[in-house]
Image (cartoon, rainbow, N blue to C red; front, side):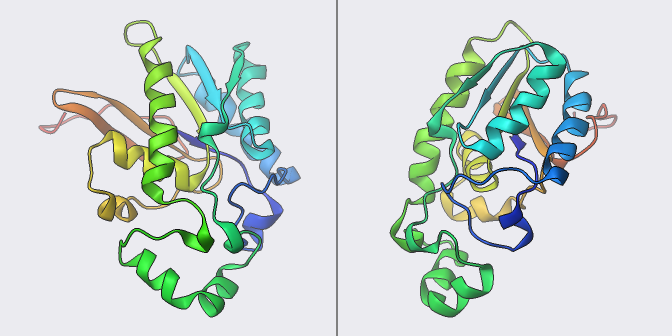
Length: 204
């Protein structure tokens, strides 16, 4: 699960949501660097949000691997209504109660938009659908957005939605690695920017 590269709104701490913002030059460079690392994992398939920032990030991995990218709007970021385009500070000032309720883990339609569970409802099935098509021990790269990735990971791990916030955010162009464990999905790496290392010890 790979988050897109940097955008101008990321730098301004402005809520993007489904607003279609392009990568900065730095974001493109981040995607190119990360793509070279992820290509060494020999992915079998790439699926991405159709928003520019995710699609352009995925295109860098496609360029290195030769794999086509399947685009799916179900992997878009959370729609957040009137919050979109506001800075973090403006959201706190104008929608303090709603913001505080969301941070407490209450189901909140931020800005009149989607619930986090609704984001997971649309995104997690896309990940599962593409994962089921993989060869045995195959690797799928999902290129999406911070909020969508967090809610999807929470859903796949079977966590109660109130606890999804306990999964820390992803930095631009960093990723989380999930794999199959004895009891279902397992989070192997989170907010990584380097290749996974083998786990040596009693907790493998």
